[in-house]
Amino acid sequence: MNPLVWITGLLLVGLFVMVLEVFIPSGGLLGFISIAAIVAAVATAFVEQGIGSGFLVLAITAVAVPATLAIAFHLFPSTPLGRRIMPSPPEPQELVPGRKERERLREFVGRQGRVAMDLLPWGQVEIAQEKIEAVSQAGPIASGTVIEVVGTEGRAVIVRTIETKPELRAFPEPSEDAQGTSSLQEKRDESPISSVKTFEEFEFDDFEKPSGA
View 1 (cartoon, one colour):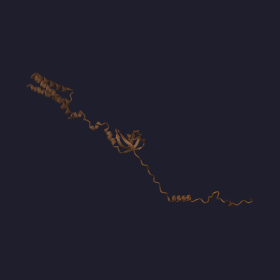
View 2 (cartoon, one colour):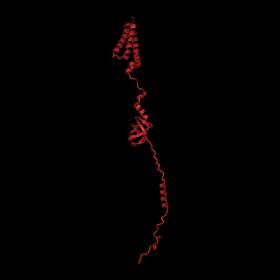
View 3 (cartoon, rainbow, N blue to C red):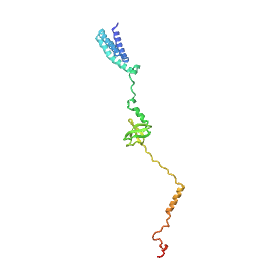
View 4 (cartoon, rainbow, N blue to C red):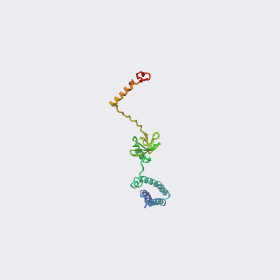
């Protein structure tokens, strides 16, 4: 048989078995067979075709082996075995730490709650019966204060106090009896007391002198 056929056949068998070693792990058995076939192809070229053909086959082998391995490793993740062995790469969003927690905290923006632990400025707030780490937007906030979520910072929410307006109490209109009583009181205050006299105006002659005086 022509030596070129042996050389070409051994080289192709070596490269093919090398690809199988990548796709089907055999504990090194297929890798050993692949190396043996490639070495046999190079040795046959040197022995049967001379030094020139031997170096030519050696150069072809030096280029073909890395190229074959690169193609095999590139295609391996898309194969059923590759998908089973190699996990799929993470999504870019999953590389951000705490992304899901931050998205959940953004849902609380605009909602109201109460301070569960004094914010100095960090503490806890309670919103919808859930305690959440929080930070005050401006200054400390005492426990029990009504707050509103205005944003997020890391794994905490930013809150501010809600300004509550004082309630105006409506007083009832006075009744007719109360109005009459107040008008009489005003008249009494305005009218002078005529029955009271000063010491200078008092008439002592009106008193009868006692008998025997």
